[in-house]
Length: 276
Image (cartoon, rainbow, N blue to C red):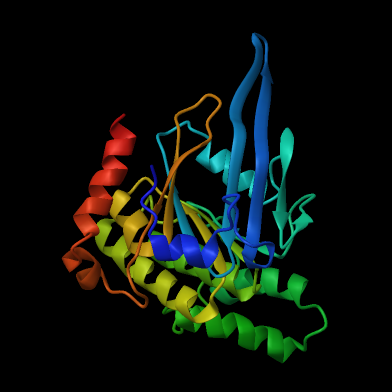
């Protein structure tokens, strides 16, 4: 059973277990994903239901192969839906769109372009009626927020892996999406760089208040960043197995989280789920 406080239920959940419609940013309803194979259909996800509130940060954990990335790519509109539907602010998605920004594990930058040019790729498309100066100001603002004010004109190929991911974070926030989707964005980084980028991500998110959905294999990262941690069952036919509310105040620091009396209770809950 999920650890959900009585206050959370009173404040956010209706009697039917769903959030009020005006509070929901992202709604996954009976989501299904099927891949045809020579031996028959392989059902990755089935009967997957999840609602994510406006300005909420949700992390998703589960074993490899449970369909986490498949679900995220479907939300992004990059992978066709086999059944059910996905809605952003009540409107069913039909493909990729600027209302959803994506940060991948690999930043996927254009290596011959500068940091600024890479961020401007999205900004120019989303804000075509803005002046050139306005678009440049937007791109520079977010590059400064991720600590790259001295690397505007460095080519992506000249940047370290951590710096490239900073560009990826800036690029995603710069298009002002309604939903930010993160697919293990720090999974390939060393622990020091990972911690730095977690802090940068949550600092910008605290200011922007964009709904965020992040896949991670790291239990500690899931707890530190999230308002709720969603646990997926193992595949095939994966679905939501449990949801854990993280009742830490924001803004939060890593030190305050580690010293909180509930931290190890949350951690044990997640590890117990993964080990079953």
